[in-house]
Each structure stands twice: as C-alpha cells, then as structure tokens.
Amino acid sequence: MTIQARLDERYGRGRASRRRVFAWIIFGVIVAATTGALAWSTVSTAASDVDVDVLAFSLVDQHTATVSFQVTGHADREVACAIEALDEDFGIVGWKVVVYPPSGEQTRAYDVSVPTVGLATTGLVNSCWLP
Image (cartoon, rainbow, N blue to C red; front, top):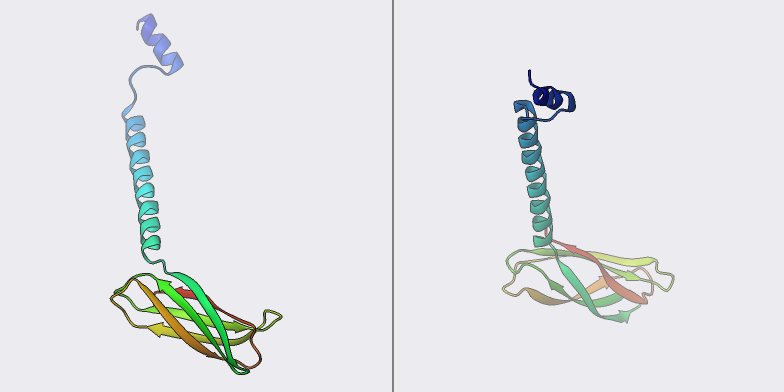
C-alpha cells in the first residue's frame, strides 16, 4: 500500500463509496418530493380562496338587518357565506348561512336580510367558502 493510499484511508479521502452515493441520491429524491408536495399544497390552497368585502349595513327594523357585500372567487363554483349581525357589545344577535349558485361573473354582489333577536348595530360576513 502506498503512502498516499494510507493517508487517504486514514483521513477518509478518495472515492466515495457506493453507499454514500446512494444515500445522497435518496436524500435528493426526498427533498425534491417534499418541495413538490409543498408547492402543490400552496397552489391548491390559493386556487380555492374566496375574498369578501362588506359594502354596507342597514337596519330594517328591530328584528331584521341587511348586509350588502361582494364575493370574488370562482365563477363556475357555488359559494357559501356566513353572515352575522352584532349588537353594540359585539354579541351575535343574528346569523345566517347562504349558498349561492355558480355565476358567470368572478365578482358578485349580494344583499342578505338577517333575522335578529335584538337590535343590531352592525353586520358583517363572518366567512365565505367553496362547499
């Protein structure tokens, strides 16, 4: 055995063993698969987003409030929204879930009457989602 071979053996230099190369290939495949799964998860979550903007609130009477809002999302899918009316202490005095059919427009405006058990001072859209 030459001096160079002895030094390489002592300090772990030289050709990489097949096990080490195989381990790095497996590690690379796992990293690529994980990155692909995270990218797919991000894209699929962003594709199902629904944006809501409350435009107005009006009090019809002591037992009815109207909330006007617009929904921006998929034009070819139905959208469900939870609308609520709140009193002056921000307690929920009215709640309604409405499902809207698919429409040809990406942004749609709606007016919803919410029955209340007390006097409401504001109304809002709690959330909207794709059922």
